[in-house]
Length: 266
Length: 184
Image 1 (cartoon, rainbow over the protein chains, first blue to last red):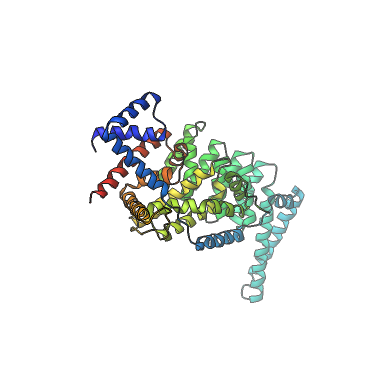
Image 2 (image 1 turned 120 degrees about the vertical axis):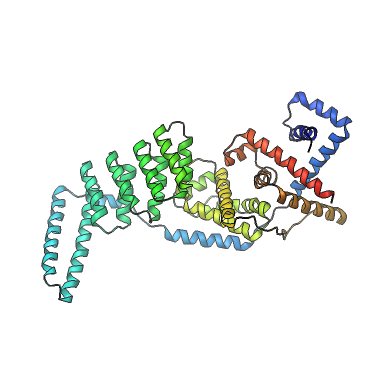
């Protein structure tokens, strides 16, 4: 296509769209009145536009709607019903109660110790298993309680116990997510994120990390979350990383972390 | 909870984000056909286009928590649609073979006119097929889906001026291919 045709088309596309500057409109109309080439190109553009206008809307099959309904139903069933406010209330203990829990744990450990002396007895082994299970339950209560204490160091202890000495379940995960999102102490937030990385196979953890990245304003927390998402190879966090890069208020250190994270995620 | 269909897309998506997943049904009703046509006008494959529509809604469900409140939903869903399309072709390495649309309905006065328009439409589709992916996509958005340049700019994350330049290039290229085909 020669340059002359290119230029004519550029002007005619704008002319047809009504976006040509007023000063050029009369010039184009003059050309259209006298030049066959201009008239031909305009007719061609008209034809193409008419055809695109006439192109029918194609309907998907009814199967498409059914597939969507199935997808939606499956997702609705998978939503866990958790009331965080209730869980907080339930697990708020006084220090005295905590000491009682600790004492119980000590007794249980002694029980386990005594139990191990009778390894050969099958019924005693079952008893040991039950005691261990009970002990884990107590430690879970202790961890959940510590996570609600006013002292930041207690809450960090709570995170540590949650990670090392309890069976991970939704209650613990939500408590850690809560600490990441709501704790006023940045060290507790960072510790919670560090802990959550260990449970990246849980969908709620990934969702919570992505959501937190959009809400948290502390640079340290943002960087830690991005590192967690990169470690877990969460490609779906890509838009959040991009948003951080585009945000004018974000400091350079956070942007650098987002940029290097994007390179890895890509 | 009943979902009021008068709600904006953004309000409905906010409900989805807050785990009221039924709101997504209304969004599906609103976007199923436009998205299907968005894909279909680029790959001319009905089954694949339906799969891609499902993929878009799967991703919305999966990443519902990442929807930023107040963000224009239409731009967001089309960005997801573009990503779904790109991911599909990355996994396939090539664009699917040309498949004739199966339910074209053209309303014109005479049989002659009707045949002529049908032939022209077929020729247009073949010309569209020969366009580079990006040019085909931008024509689908601006001409077939009738999106404003500003809206396309938000989806492609570029300026309106850049969209205008891309549209110009695409139209010029389409005209070149279309009328060259007429010569044979």
